[in-house]
Length: 514
Length: 108
Ligand SMILES: Cc1cc2nc3c(=O)[nH]c(=O)nc-3n(C[C@H](O)[C@H](O)[C@H](O)COP(=O)(O)OP(=O)(O)OC[C@H]3O[C@@H](n4cnc5c(N)ncnc54)[C@H](O)[C@@H]3O)c2cc1C
Ligand code: SF4
Image 1: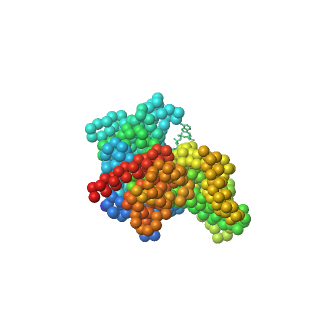
Image 2: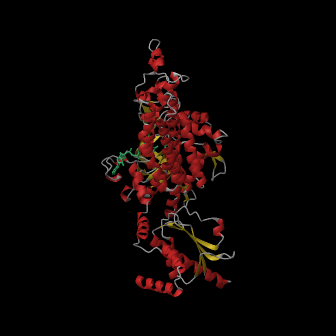
Image 3: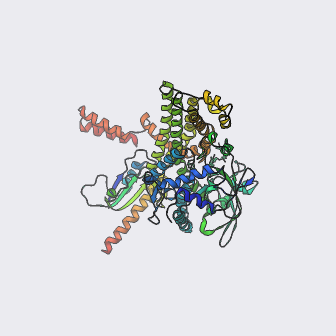
């Protein structure tokens, strides 16, 4: 089957019947429910842009399994150029949607499981990787969107999965049958899950031997029996139910549309199980997936920064202050931070390497540094956007007042800025900044792909402090510096010291060493 | 046996490659070369890269040896370990290759 267009993706969702709840009601049709529509549109852009010649070079790839042209969101990275194209694709989509387009979590899950299932099979002679490749081919052929479900609810964070009072707060296998397994538990905050075709699960942390029932990875269609999705609230979400001006980004929404997914004794056939009990590989999968996922943020969030920087510059212009030093300086600061994050995204991709499975993975140290920067810089550039925009982003009267026959004219008169800028456009832009700089996008940048602590752990692990100590000892003169000694030897020669003198010096040094 | 060693350039290595190779030079009695002359490939090529990026693992470098052992940071031939174990494994691999080459030569 050919790659889906945006519209075909939306139509394909109509064929699914997931059990989704929102505001205490079961939702009949995900694609027609007004609160969900923007999220569906944002995800649809990942399909639609793959058909546009101007974006094809980064939005599509050649499947290493079939040789067919596929959407890059279903591709296994075959070299570092693929990793680079992936982050370019993230920035592009961030710019075009101004929000989270959701599909990358599934892409990272596909790549993470590809790498780890191969390693499990190498150790145990199991058939997870073979099953996974068959599943991957199915995903590529049908151009499916998969949600990547890693985060468990976790209960008491100080306890391991098997120590929890309620054993279900981490997703687990409760029964092994000849044809498959039964799973129970939940996954929390799962992006794009209501409008995905498949849900791919992965463990959320390192597991010990007592946790082996929690060392679990599988994929199931979103409307599998026993699965319930409960949609999460977002800042100002009900504004979408109004006519649009106040929503900020009415076409694509805010963050990704996250849901709590309940697995109430769900059957998973063995062909769709990619890890079941191999607890020592749980950490590898967590780190591989998280590495890929963290590398995205310097792409997608920088794409969002591009939009918010543009909005801030436009507002400054409509206020007549675009040439003022403080405004230009602030915009430059915003650009500098965004491009720093972008540099990290490119760097961790260019510094990627091949894994035993053949798939390429990013440089984990640089990817974690990138995401740690995002947890800080996003707040900073959004703070600066608030600075440029002024207090009006949170005091602006509503659209209903603006449209009111009696008082609307006052809003039009007093919210007006420089000549040539309509009040309506100014309201649109203020609302966009409010949506992006005050709303749910901030904690998303902080917690999405893991809390800052998770990044610091990985950075600490890759930092190689021991080597840095060795370097310092050489420079401080505590340890020998062989290269320096070579230079000074030449120096001595040129000062007329005889060969015999130099040899004597060498001997004395060897003696000292002994 | 003629062994060629190719370093990656060591911009920011996870391992101390020169230390590993020095240990090799002290332990083995083979000819170890860093700058091979001519096009004749060595019996064994050791490509020793400071990290998993392995930027020097290229076809033109591979052509420098009949057979190769690749070290990518703490990985030796796709096995992850610390520097001490890595050095031991490297020596074991060289010895086993020597054995194979010797038996092949006998057969010939
Ligand atoms: C918008 C959004 C989208 C997301 N999308 C996805 C998705 O698609 N798929 C997915 O799998 N996940 C997703 N996540 C989840 C995300 O990965 C988690 O939010 C993140 O890992 C943090 O976990 P938590 O929210 O449960 O916070 P908690 O685990 O409660 O952490 C809160 C704080 O406690 C600290 N903490 C936690 N445990 C310990 C401990 N044992 N010791 C010391 N400190 C501790 C943390 O470091 C953090 O500072 C998403 C999150 C958001 C906000
Ligand atoms: S926030 Fe996460 S899921 Fe959304 S676009 Fe960025 S990386 Fe992808």
